[in-house]
Structure formats: structure tokens, C-alpha cells
Image (cartoon, rainbow, N blue to C red; front, side):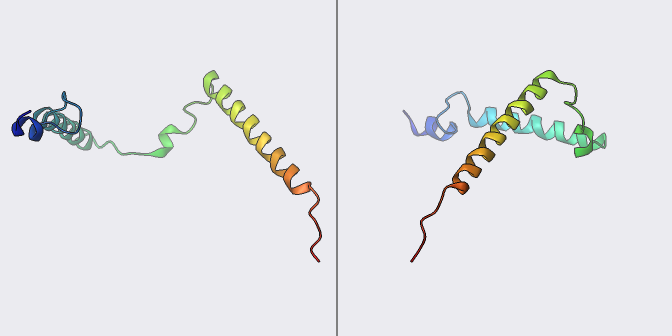
Length: 87
């Protein structure tokens, strides 16, 4: 492998050359400039309620609550075990 090939490639991905990376960055910069010119701002309030009626999210939350409750029960059991008295 020549020295030119090793300096033109980024990391271990041979498809990601310096030229392709520069093109991708240029594209992202254009998109960012377009977003800024339209006045788009990141606002967390836009996402509130986004998944309210989504069945997949309801299932995910139900599973998360089951895991959390199991953790609580486990922690309570450990706390209730009698500890040996120190003398």
C-alpha cells in the first residue's frame, strides 16, 4: 500500500476517503445554513406529547415500569434482611 493511499483514507473504512468526507461536511454545512436562514430553532416543547397515543411507546413504558418495580422489590428485600449485631 502506498503512502498516498494511507493518507487519503480516514480510519479503517476504505470507502470514506478524505474527498468524500469533505463533500459530506460541505453538504451538512449547506443544510445547517438553510435551517438557520429559515429561523428553525431547537425547541424541546415541540416534542412534548409526540408519542402520547403510540402503542409501541405505551408498551415500552409498561415494560420499563415492570423492570423498575422489580428493582424496587429487590432493593426492599436486601434491606429487610437481618444484619448481624456488632459487638
